[in-house]
Amino acid sequence: MLRKLPIFFMALSLVLLTACSQQEATFYELTFEQDRILFLDTNKPFSGIYTEYYDSEQRFPKSRIIVKNGIMDGGFYHYNPDGTLREKGTNRAGIIYGYHSLYWPNGKIKQKFFVGRDRAGYNYEYFDDGQLREMRHYNEQAQLDGKSFTFHRNGKVKDEMNYKNGKREGLFIIKDKAGFLVNVYEYRNDVLQEHARDISISDHDQFSAMKTMPYHF
Image (tube, rainbow, N blue to C red; front, top):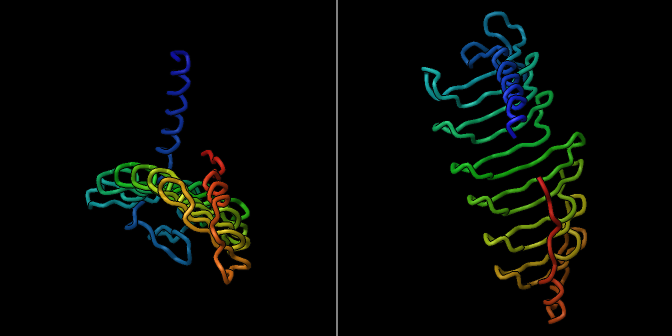
């Protein structure tokens, strides 16, 4: 461990030096025209870190956003008035891309979503204690696609639904806090079928034993 520390501090120093070398400007020095960020005095595209503050003395930052040639391109960070991180993510050519995270005031993750190069991705939401609350996946058209889940606070699955190109398709399964089956409905092409599925003892055993797929971050 001791041998690795110098390497860590060298890497950290390099990141800090890179950030410090970027030009910083506030709202009062820039102008926003047609999705471009320009210098107010020269009307030329701004490159650097666009920073907003809560106070006129510029002691408490509200947002820090990397801008390249007048376009938001790179990391961005939004803060609460007390200085704690509220939101962070990445822009690519002015569009949110990659990982994006929001946080509760206590610092626990509130929401995390990912937008891929093809616009497909996922959205996970959490309770204020960090426990997963909702899990959804999207296709290239930003439509719900595949398995979606919501959870009780104790981590047990609350309901499970399958989507295909934004439409509900298949069984909609509802469970109680103990993990036992409450009801099962069936959808075809986003239309609820005339009769809900009758719950039998075999169904109860089958669906109560179902487990969600593991997801890692």
